[in-house]
Image (cartoon, rainbow, N blue to C red):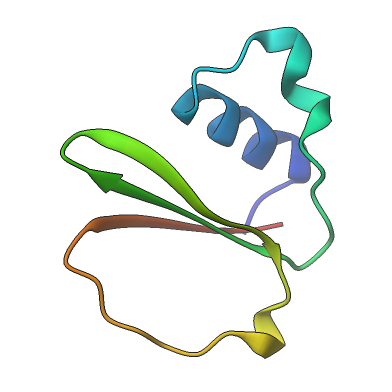
Length: 68
């Protein structure tokens, strides 16, 4: 759980986005974001998901969850 700005910054760094593009990422309150790392490369799997709609799953990759 973090402030939307922190989550935007984290996602922007993972995706190597330029600093001026950070506010192009919408962050809703209470949303869930998922970044997977596969072979050292980040993949944005989920952005702004409603946590009530998510189900638990298994993955063999490294995964970062964040919640705004």
